[in-house]
Length: 117
Image (tube, helix red, strand yellow):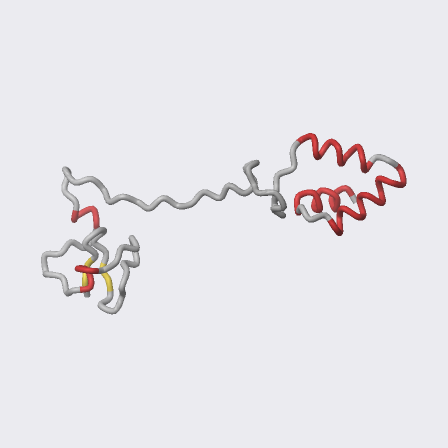
C-alpha cells in the first residue's frame, strides 16, 4: 500500500491517480514508510495551507446566455405572456398550442405548450 503525498489517502499499488484527490501518484505509487499519515488532517501542520481544489466548470445553460438554437434556452417573461395570449385565441390558439407541443425545438416552450393543453 502507498499513501498520496497530497491528501494522505491510501492508494493501491496499481493506481495511477489518487482515488480521493485525483492527483497523479508519482511518489504515491511507491511504498510508503511506516510513519506515513493515514489522513490528510494528520499530514498537515498548522502552518501549511490546505491543498488547492480544482474549480469545476459552471453550467451556464439556462442562465440567459445560452447559444442560439440551444434546446434548453431560457424563455423570458414576455415569451410566456405572449404564448398565453396566443393560446387564448379560440381556434388558432388551440392549433398553435398543438403545433408547439409537438414541434417546438425549445424544450421549455414545448413543455409549456403541453401543460397548456
